[in-house]
Amino acid sequence: MNKTDVLHVNSDTCYDIIMENGFQGLGEHVRNVLVCAHSVLIVSDEKVYGLYGDEVKKTLTECGFEVKTHIAEALCESKKTQSTVTEIYKSAIDANLTRHDAILALGGGIVGDVAGFAAATFMRGVNFVQVPTTLVAQTDSSVGGKCGINFDGVKNLIGSFYNPALVYISPHVLCSLPQRERCAGMGEVIKYGCIRDASLFSDLASGDFDISDVILRCLRIKRAVTEKDSHDLGLRHILNFGHTVGHALEEYTSGEILHGEGVAYGMYAMALAGERLKITAQGTAKSIKDLCEKHGLKTDYTKYFGFEKYISRDKKRTADGIKAVFLTEIGSAVIREISVAELTGLLYG
Ligand code: GLY
Image 1 (cartoon, rainbow, N blue to C red):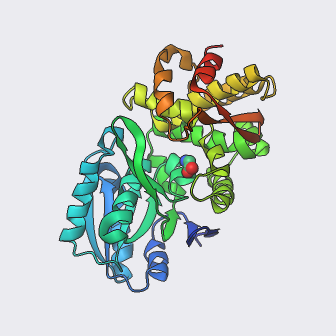
Image 2: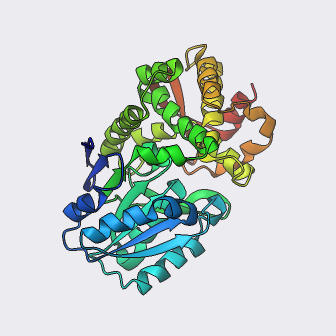
């Protein structure tokens, strides 16, 4: 018997995160939340749809949905653009989608971000279902409603907060993830240990953990934080630990560095900066470096000398600087406003 875990999210809108192994139950869960829907437009990429598209289509069809598809070629950061969203709008029009219907994202964080933005804006909003297939998307980006595109070389500059009606997570798909993507996903997982859960950090260091359990632990933190601050005005910034540097590195390398890889560099960088500022307990940066390396992630960010000029374009900037996330110790994060010049100085010691 397939086990089902359910996390109920009580945010601006309420929705469930369902975790089951396999897609057999997906159609029924979608039907339970979209009682009046007639059609579902699956947005995916060729690789993921080739692996799981038939199963997903079958379960939705069996539950009475007319299923249409929008299958893109590989969707990388450089394709997170308005023209990709426009192509999804065209498929939604071809599919005769109404406001009762849904767009379903089947894929990683980029698919979720562009499909979510299309769902948020097509006819001022159609239902949205997230079926994340990467570790980054399962532990982080599929929950909390952030969606959008890159613009003018800045990551996620245009976007919205648009909660899904349902998030359906099947950890079995992680076995088909390329090793590099899986390691990158561990960057987001380690982040959750850093900001809120020292015991998760220790379990990851011991190597003795079950990935489904780890995903649920990350999601419980994400739920707790986004329920308190859905629009990223305060507390939610802690979820961006390591992201200010990480995003700058992603932009500096034009997407050569994967998101989770950037987060790993960024967490180490911010822990070092925090130690230099005497906010962070000494030895924290070394613990993060060791754990990242254990999970195949690099941390030597200084080799990307010059990346710091991208920090000033961070969305968390204020008139006087940026809202930076530091750790006091593993498991505890604080937000401090700091000028970009001071942060840059700290990053280079
Ligand atoms: N990934 C950070 C957030 O959802 O706020």
